[in-house]
Structure formats: C-alpha cells, structure tokens
Length: 341
Image 1 (spheres, rainbow, N blue to C red):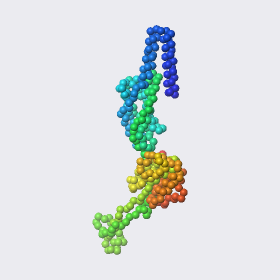
Image 2: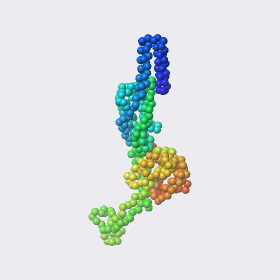
Image 3: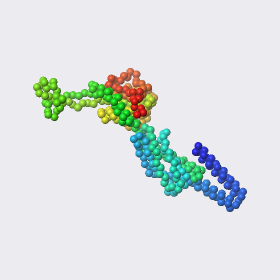
Image 4: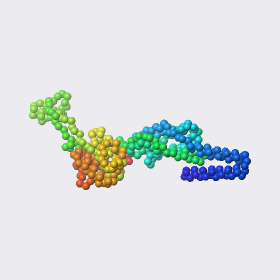
C-alpha cells in the first residue's frame, strides 16, 4: 500500500513536471523559466536527500530474563551534514519477530533510535538485521538499505516459574526418594567407637553397646548420592519447546540437591546425536530419523544408573527397551499441569 502510494506520488510529480516543461516551451516568459528552474531544483534536492551515506554508532543492547533484547543506536551522516530526509523508518528483525520505529530527521545531524524489546527464539544469535528506509523531501523518492547489527546473545529454553518448578519437584520427589533408598545408594560403617559427649543420644548403637557393656556409636562413611541421568528425547516435534523447557528447569532444580547428568538426544548440525554439554540446549532440534534415534537411546540407557526421561507421547521408545523400576518417564500429558502457569 505504501509502495503504491509512493509510485503514484512520483508519477504525479513527473506529470506535473512535464506540464511545467510544456508551459515553459510554449510560453517562454521569465515566470515560466523561473517555475521550470525552481521545480527542477526541488526535484533534484528531493533526489539528493536520499543519497546520504549513513553510519550507525553507539549500539547498546542487553537481554532481559524473558529472552527479549532491548537495543538502541544512533544514526549519523558520514559527512556530518544534516539530513534532508523527511522521515526514516527502521525495522529490527530476527526470524519472524520485528520492531519498527519511525523518526523525523529533517535537518538533524544525529537520529537516536530505541527499539521496543524484541523476543528472540532459542539459540545463539550473533547478529540482528536492521532494515532502513529513508523517505526524501516531498515523499517522492525512497531509499532502502539493510545492515547487520553484531550481537552475541545466547537464548536458552525458558525456565518455568518458581511455583511451577515447585510443582514439578513435588511430582518427581517420590521417584527421587525411591532412588535414594535403592541399592544404588550405598553407605558403609567406617568404625565403631566409644560414645563421646558431642554425640547425639540417638546415635547410640544399642546392640553393640549391650554386647560390649558400654555405649558405642557407629561412624559411617559419607553416603553416596544416587546417580541420576536426566534425558531429553527429542524424537518428535510435539510440544518440543515446552518439554525442553521442563527438562532445563528440572536440570537446574536437581543440581541444587544432587548431581545430575544432562543428556540431550535429538537433531544437531551433523545429524541425530547425543550431547551432554549444557550449551547444546541452544541448537537441539526434533529429529525425524526414528532408526538413528532408537539406536542412540538404546545404547545410552544401557547402564545401572537412575534415569529420568522426558519425551513426547508420540515418541515411542525402541522395541524391546523397557525402563527399569527406578526409571521415570514423563510426557506432555504427565506434565500438563505446568502449562499456562
């Protein structure tokens, strides 16, 4: 619509300019030549007003906790001449998200611009696209340019709210308690010694005390934490980002209590793979290679460790692979109470 309006205005101006030329040729008077030169000068100034070389300076940005980026910059003329543009439209773009600002710039040397916060998708962002459209005097000519604004923003999956993380931990706590009291969670008696004043009365081992005729206390080695592996099985696009967000939130919560290993199974640049590093949360995508994914999950789950597996309901486990009693499997139906909270 805006482009058609500009073309209509340009055609109208040139039609009028043609009439001025015709009038000057037909009636060669001083007034006619004045109108011709004046109109020619206005058209020339209008065209030259869009020929500025623009420089972007003072780029400042920061990322909010909601994975939004706030950015400001200053647009200046390279030759430090004032702008003769009637207005400037600047659009900050990233994928399907955009933020647009309109600025009046006539006779300004610097045009400061602050964009509204732009929501960034999950991933590592090294640059944003800035589309620039300058409107000349009288709105006849337009000039469009595109710049790449360098940034370095890592957007991890969104973390659940505090209340939802509490609900999540309440749901999996019974499974964690079973693991902590399973055969995987061992402890050993280091020594049996005489009772000392600093020992609690409840720490007395009564069987040994009766046998030896004096109060005795058992010292234990430090208990070993139950090894827990947290798996995200990205073999389906169903609720992919939601389940990845739940996995990331659970990983953060678990590591405040015990040591948990994170395993990401999904599509990466080189194809279906298993990755452990936390930064791989930025690049993992759902995989459609069911055979390769089944092979990966079958090999990685063949250990004696406790597993928590988060996957989509339509992402089936490989044939013949049955989770152990100490394992927990959750899908979007089990975690529906976390949506919208």
